[in-house]
Image (cartoon, rainbow, N blue to C red; front, side, top):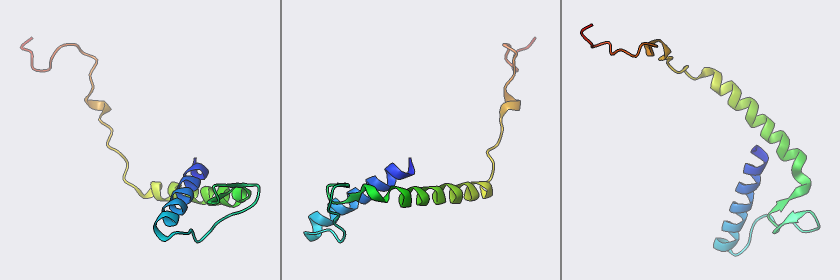
Length: 85
């Protein structure tokens, strides 16, 4: 998932820069490129970057407050707690 997101960002940024500036700072040539903006030979490098994001997000997620559990408010009774019975 991270690899696809990184490629989407890389391709989009390359396309936008090429339209705005007239050229992209990186332009891949050869057999393993997509539009000159993505190089498929960089899969291992971007995969490792994605793993780094995963580790970073997992560490960051531990520091976030835990959601409040409201399960104790749910009752199995079909009667309203406001009934006069």
